[in-house]
Image (tube, rainbow, N blue to C red; front, side, top):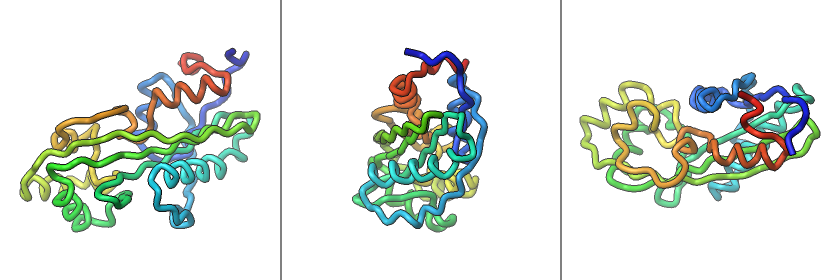
Length: 198
């Protein structure tokens, strides 16, 4: 059952990609980055790690907006048994791409949604990305754009990085940092419909 009044929707993330996904889906969030120190979470299991970070970010922001729905998210890429966030610098991004080319990585995104009632839902989603077997010159040119330095996994699937991706299995928006179908289900579980925010 839908609630009688629509609460404010707060995104506890500075991610431009997440904000644009929400806006494209008809949800215009108030953006309030949590600035949570991710080094506080020493978890190595990817789904648990991103779910924990998403929860911490949402819980940090929620007290400032007691009558709002607050969404926290975090994404990492798992590749060859390791977890990768944003690359440290250009050299790191180049090294990662040399490892990833022609192979598959798993993008894990944690989602934490806190209702005005204080009810908390935490979920994670995974999408598999198959990278093209690109040459060193292409890797260098891509890294020089600066785009991969701001993205988990050193690529942006809704930018120039889309040229380097052969195939995606699973939720496409999850690769950008937010699974819209999962968000819709979480909203419904809390008694809201995504269409209420249009």
